[in-house]
Image (cartoon, rainbow, N blue to C red):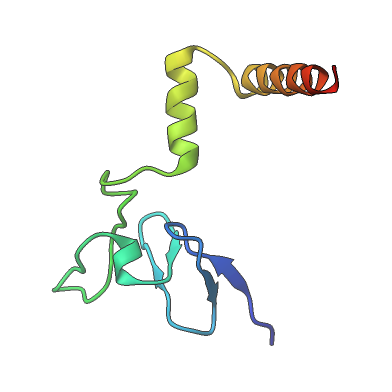
Amino acid sequence: MSVDFFDCVTCGESICDCGLYYRCDNCGRKFCSTECVGVEQDEDLGYYTSCRYCSGKDATTTQLLEFALGKLNLTTDELKEMYLKEIANESTKREE
C-alpha cells in the first residue's frame, strides 16, 4: 500500500491522500481546506458538489492563460516563441 501526495489546487499546500482533504465531485480537483474549496457545502448531501472553479467564482492559471491567448489571437506555441526570443534578446543585452 502506498501513499500519494498532491498539491491543493488553490494554495499549493501539499496534501496526503490518506489525510483529510476535500474533492470536488464535479471536476475532481483536490483541496486542503474548506476555504480553498471556496463554496458552501451542500447541507442536504453533506459534501461539496462543486468547487470555486466549477461554480465560476474563480479561475485557474491555465484558464486565464487560455482566455488571454484567445483575446490576443495567439497559440501557446506562438507565445512560447515570443517569450524565448525576448529572453534571448535580454541575455544578449546583458552580455554586451
